[in-house]
Image (cartoon, rainbow, N blue to C red; front, side):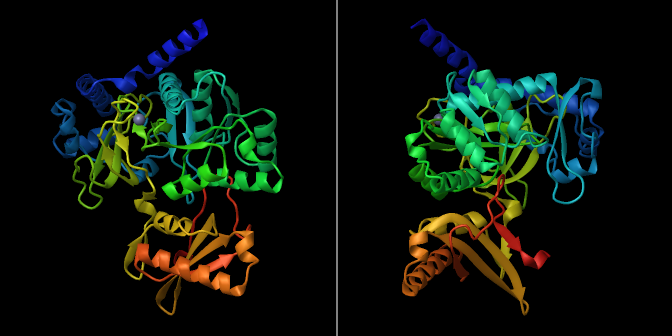
Length: 442
Ligand SMILES: [Zn+2]
């Protein structure tokens, strides 16, 4: 009994800020914001210069709304100041670096002081509590350890929770499955596409995941859809929770879904969210869809003011059944960077994913191939179908192909060539899935 009371008390103290009433929360945000802007102004030449260009000083930020006068920070700013140009702490106070795997050129470098690592640990701890995990859970952490923030971010939070952490990192799927089964794992952290791959491989090895004690998946690091959540929950014993974060802000742990799975709650005491019009940069009201912009409120080594995430979402200030007062973000299923323009039509891979997965007989593996043939954009969608469908008559395959072409056209408004491929024909990813091959850019 006492251990139950102890753990209950621990839950309440770790999550107290999740339930702060709006007024004290806004006051805390403003106080932290003002301190952070002053720090960035005093220590980071780029921020000071940008404010000076606008004739602004830190004291001009007198309310949270005043933040909208400040300039944005973009990924290009991180590249241009590579590697240490945006640091607000001297190197002797930096205890950790992480970096993005830049596809071209130099990576994006981020840094943490000891306090930053503690803050990160605390928000990740709150993420695990939000989805009902606690000490006694066995957490298999299949996010990559290394320069990528996913592995160590989840690791520290899971240890703070008091869970038993398996730091398996990404890859080696058969070993992952063996440990899932032998250790009685109750929760897993990885990308949703990698978990789909685990489900499939377990099936081939004759292991029924539904017989295991596994009950929660903490999935992030790539955009995914409700249709994908439906497939994961139908084919495994877990509840799939959406976690959101990015290295430039802290790593995973910016926002996390609660047990109600109704969109991630943003840890607003640490990160101040705005949603802006992608074209004009104007701040939009809660409920309107646009690009998420985040300002760190506590980060010491590398404060970020109005960082443009490229993620498209809307802020949701409706009360959540869990009682948390933190606003939620609508599921991020697309990034403005992912937008494809095909024959003048704007579309996102997630729209195609949702259309494909709504049709029976498809597997959650697909690839979008864009090419230009005789000056005209061609869109091909390769999608794996179940072994039953694939071994069926030619007529059945043609019927499915028609059905998928219509489903995709209804959503994106243009005709795509659908190519049905057998199970395993498409390459699997051990981290973030690569959904689009745009040959026009090669
Ligand atoms: Zn909630």
